[in-house]
Each structure stands twice: as structure tokens, then as C-alpha cells.
Amino acid sequence: TPLAQMPIGPQILYKAGRTLAQMNRVLAEFQHPTRESLQREDFLWKLSNTHMLDTYLHVMEEESHRQMVEQIIQQFKEKILPNLSKFRKSLNHGDFSHTNILVQPVKSSAEHSDPTHPQQELDISGILDF
Image (cartoon, rainbow, N blue to C red; front, side):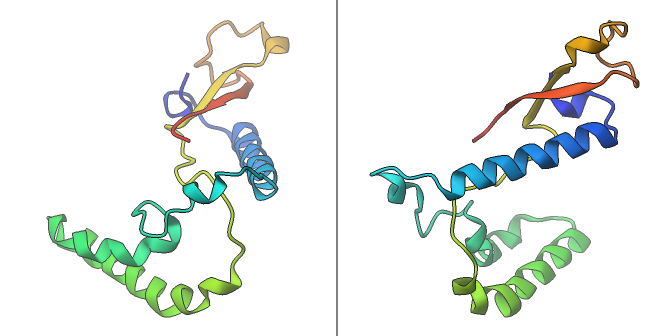
């Protein structure tokens, strides 16, 4: 079940953070002969290419949203882009969100048969869109 469809509490948020940290740790050491093919420099969804999004601002109809995104892109250009070489490069999950995290009820808490029950303890069972 996607986490987006479940009641979200501190336990599952902690588990999600721990899972993301574990993934990042493993991916930092990931080696493969074709790994470089995953590091496409002009890939729009690569976080270090945030500045490239300004090309698409014209499609945002809501003025307040467009201004907010413009400010974020400007801050990225001023503060991050000049320092990009100081950041460690690694593979990561760039869309780790409640819609891409799958959860399942913890087996030991079977007394709550309804997985949407607010007291149901959940475990991360999968990560989508990787």
C-alpha cells in the first residue's frame, strides 16, 4: 500500500528516513562498469540541474507558484551552483516521497487487522520510481 494512502505518524516517518539513509549509504559505495551512464550531465531530473528548470517556468499559470519557483531557482544559481564541486556525487533516489514508498502492517501487531487503523504499526515494504 502506498504510504500516501495511510495515516502517517512519527514511527513510519522515522523508518522512512532510516531507509533513505541506508539507501544513500549503499549507493555511495555502488560500483558498476556502466555506472557513469547513469550520471547524464544534461538530465533534467538530476538535482544538480535545478537551474535548467527556468526554461519551463512559462507553463506555470499560478503567478505566486511561479514566483516561488523562480526564487528557488535563483537561490540555487547563487548559492549551490558555484559550490557544486564541493558536494559529493552519488546515486540517490530523487523522488523519495509518500507516493513512492510502499508500506505493510507489522506482523507482530496483528490485533489491528485494518491497515488504515491509526494505531497500526507499519514497515517499509518497497520503494517505487527508482
